[in-house]
Amino acid sequence: MYTVRVTDSFAAAHSLKFSQSKCENLHGHNWKVEVFVCGTGLDKSGMLMDFDKLKAILKKIVNKLDHKNLDDLQFLKGHSPSSEVIAKYIFSKLVPNIPKELLVKEVRVWESADSCASYTGDKDKG
Image 1 (cartoon, one colour):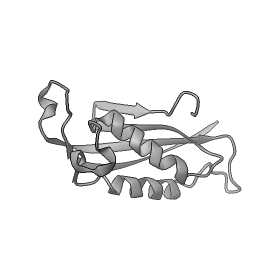
Image 2: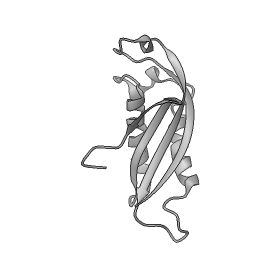
Image 3: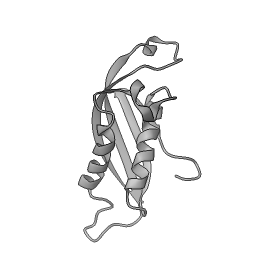
């Protein structure tokens, strides 16, 4: 199994509802996003997936989050915009946009240099 990883970043504000902590107050982060895509076969150029193509797909998703108050985004309504929820959102937007023979293995969302959450998909769907 081969795996490729790309990263991107965005700046955004959020508040964590019901956290019973200072994070219930509006605050911001410079988020880092890591995406891992895997598969068994390489293309004729010896690549699983071109980094530039994967980066472009991720960039379109991240651009919808960049310099926003995540609390106000319609697609996050009804959810506390935690790193976990954001990782799942990015994962769900990646899946239909990568080649069908590849698998989005994991999405990691970092709030800081030492704190991240990840999403790896439903246990039965990868």
